[in-house]
Length: 215
Image (cartoon, rainbow, N blue to C red; front, top):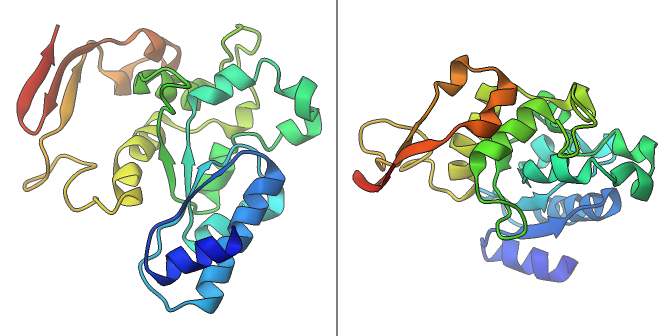
């Protein structure tokens, strides 16, 4: 895999590596480090898809290497129901370390991982902000110290996701010259109790300035 990643990087192709466990994530970061050490500099934006379980020593490496942590937050409120039984409570402390990644300066992008998980990004916001597991057994959040703010979560879904695909000049925010992609929601989510995000509905969807859905 290392030679494939180095070759892709040498040809200035963005690499997206699927990694879930702490060992897999560490190896992926090692490969990306080799790219910087052995190839010419360029606007690298390599990604690690999932980046779910990270060793503490690897938290700072995302920012250092310019690697994007492409995380799917819905999985954390699903996995949190049984993760301790499979990987142990100690390793769980570094599961979906959203707060730690942001505090270490990492660029984190969010997605849904549909069809494996529901497509609704509002549930992803709910997951990142509340970390309440689906079984209701963690009302204060699973590993609550890793919660992030709603504004941070929105940025992960918008600005950072656009950056992760080299499209930050046309989307990710609403401004003149950018794609007119936006939604109208049933609630003002910035002034809503985080636990209510789960029930927010989409009233209208606009893509490229055209209404494609209206309730």
